[in-house]
Length: 100
Image (cartoon, rainbow, N blue to C red):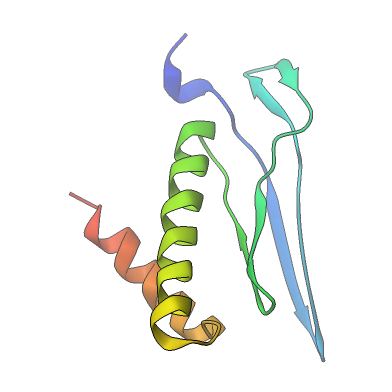
């Protein structure tokens, strides 16, 4: 079995008038074998920003930690929380920089 067959997941997000929702499964498994049911995939980056990540568990943890570091550095430098639009631009730059 290839390492690429591990840790799939599902995420869904919705936006309504004055509200948002994001949900994911918490299954950690390989193909049809469930290894655990407490895998965290939705992360609160600040009071106005939630991040949902799916895929390989090590990639989820790495991306979450790096984005949390950049969010914390922004807060230290700017003395305010990052706006969702700024977080979106940071996330786009982060993902684009690692495409090669």
